[in-house]
Length: 361
Image (cartoon, rainbow, N blue to C red; front, side, top):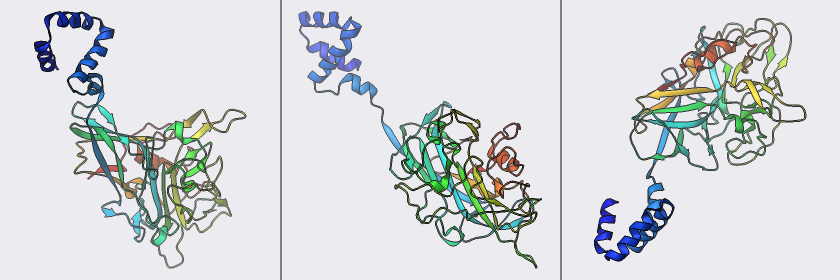
């Protein structure tokens, strides 16, 4: 800039330069006349030049895994403290507030690409199921990346939140933009979205039957897969989801029952709705998890979401009485304690530990 002004004043007649210097001393007029001067010599306006920051496109890669095995809807996995043989039927999650960490330790927000399908505002859907095998009620399309732009520079870490921000979480999914229009990822206005959905069938084979014995009251779950009519980018009608209690359609039966699977649905609970309103003003248990990874190279590394780590502290042969099989994020459900702990989410008045479900590879 100093070189440009120096060349300009060299060519400027003395009397005109004096007038120009006088005008530049006025801070309001200076920006205006400097812009005119730059236009006169065929340059980009100085104000616009100062505001323009070169951007770079980034693609943050994610992968679903079960321990050291790649996630597949056609594989069975030994999970939990009792190494129960389980087969997945769904595996999807929402991430938001994605940022890269620069070399000074500052978090720089990623401006997400608004693709009308997988990303909306600052929320992105990751979908690891592919509609095959036991995930037949899912979708063929998968999504394993978050795409957006950041200012050009050097970055050495990544940060994101598991969950949907409060201002987007409590709306009508049937009217929302994709990917927030998936009713299989939504409870209701009060509870909002399922930030993480991981569902399983029990495939443990014994000489008698394949079952999960409950500690008391049994529950037969409805199928945990999404509606087969689901597609991204279109609005879906909301049907068949639980209301208020996040039960997702599980019904109660006798003291013992065969429970063919479990569902892990993480979302906000204890959301208070004012009289006469549909949307809550706050939730006692937000149940969002912030994940930070240092030494993360966007060009080389992948964020792993590990289902084995998610269920590592759960006995999948038992279920807390009077609760749906698995975890619906209720603070009264002891089956959620290990899961929430591994996600790094404060639960049942327990402090938030360091999460173990997400790792870098």
